[in-house]
Image (cartoon, rainbow, N blue to C red; front, side, top):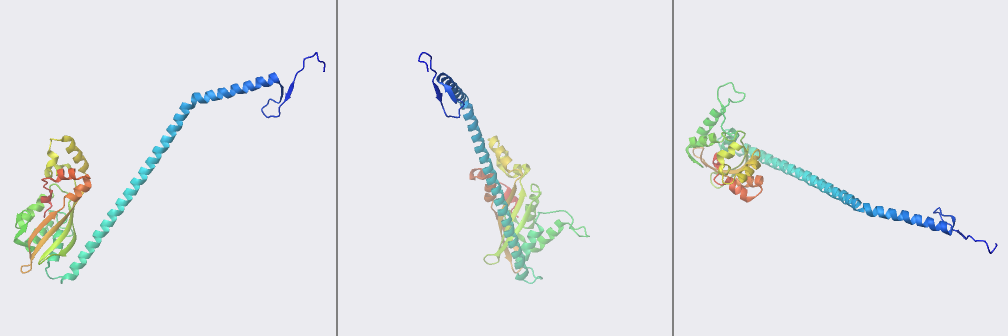
Length: 299
C-alpha cells in the first residue's frame, strides 16, 4: 500500500453482539451506545425499585395474613369438632347412667312395692318440666298433670317433710310454682341414684334452662346495678340466650316404716356453669352473688 495514503485499520471481532467487523470509530460508537442503554436500564431499575420493593413487601404481607387466616379457620374448625365430640361423649355417658338407673330400679325390689328408688325416680319423671296445669296426654278425664303431681306428693311425702325453704308439701309446691315464672323451658333430668348411709339416697340431677333478660332482672341483683352500666351491659349481653345447665345433688331421707320421704335437701352448683359461660372467676362471683336461682331450682 502507498505510504502516502491513509490506512484504515479493520478489527475483526468474533461476537454475537451485532458489532461484527467494524472500524475502530464505529466499534467505539457501538460500545458507547450499549453502555448508554445499560445505564438507562440501571437508572430505570433504580427509579422504580422502591415501588417494586413495596409491591413485593405487600404481596408477602398478604400471603402471611392469608396463612394466618387459614390457620385460625383450621384451629376454630378443630375446636368446634372437639367441642361437639365432647358434648356427644357427655350425652352418651348420661344415657348410660340413665339406663343403669333404670336397670337398678327394675332389679332392686318387686315392682308392686314402694321403694325410695321408685319414689325418687317417679318424682323427677313427674316434675321433669316443673308444675304443669295441662291435661294429661292420652287421657279421657279432665285430670291435669298438676293434679297427678299434687296427688303424688301427698302420697309419698311426709306431712312435715323438710326441704330447703321450710317444711311441708305446700312448701315444695311453692318452690316449684316459682320456677316456671322465669324458666319457661326448664328441664330437670335425673342422672344418677345411689345409696348413702342409713336410709338416705343421693340423687344427681341436671337442670337446664335458657337465660333471658327477664330471668336476669328478677333473679340476679347484678343486672339491676346501675353503678357500673358498662360492666352490667357486657355481662347481660354475654349471658342472654345461653343454655344454663346446673348440676345439683339432692339428699332424700326415707322413712322405711311409713314409706315416705322425711326430708329432701338440694345443693346446686352455680359456680361451674357460670364460670364456663363467663370465662373468669371475677365475673362469675359478681353474677351469682345473692342470686335467687338456687332457691328457684331447689325443689
